[in-house]
Length: 171
Image 1 (spheres, rainbow, N blue to C red):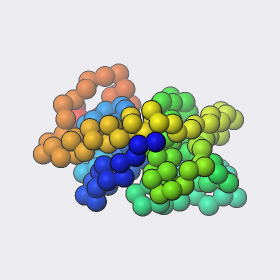
Image 2: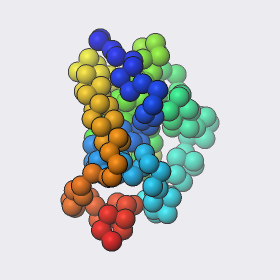
Image 3: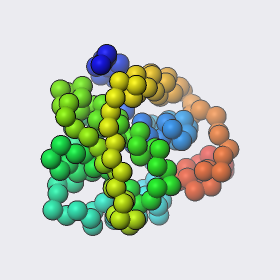
Image 4: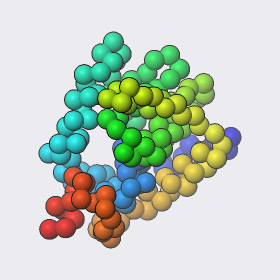
C-alpha cells in the first residue's frame, strides 16, 4: 500500500463525521468544520446520540485517536453505531476513514463494523489499496473546500429537506 501520512498535515483536522459529510454535501462539510453547528438542535442527531449511549454499554464508547472518534472497539473490530441504513454508503466511507487513520498509525489488522441496533443488523467493512487511494484523493478535495472563505454552493437536493442546516441554507 502506498500511503502518504502527511496528506493533510497538521493544519486541517478532518474528523470522520466531516469526511462522511463529503459524500453528501460539501456545504455541510464547510459549515461543520467551521463550527457553524446547527446539528445540536436536530432531533435525528439527538436520536443517534441516545442510541449510541444506550447500546453496547459493556464497551467503552467514543474512543478518541487524534481527531478520530470511534464509537467502540471490540478486539480487532471498530464499530460505528447508526440508527438506520438511510445513508449507508456514508457510514461505510466513515468506517474506512477510521481504518485508514489506524493503518497510518501502524495498526494493520483491524476491520470495521457498522452496527444498526434498531434493525438488529451489522455490516462488516475492510480497507484495501483502492480505498486508501480514494481516501487520500477525497482528503485533498476536502482540504480545498475547507480553505474557501465562504461555503460552497447550495446543492438543492431532496436530502436537503431533512438536513440540520436546512434553515441556514434556504433562509
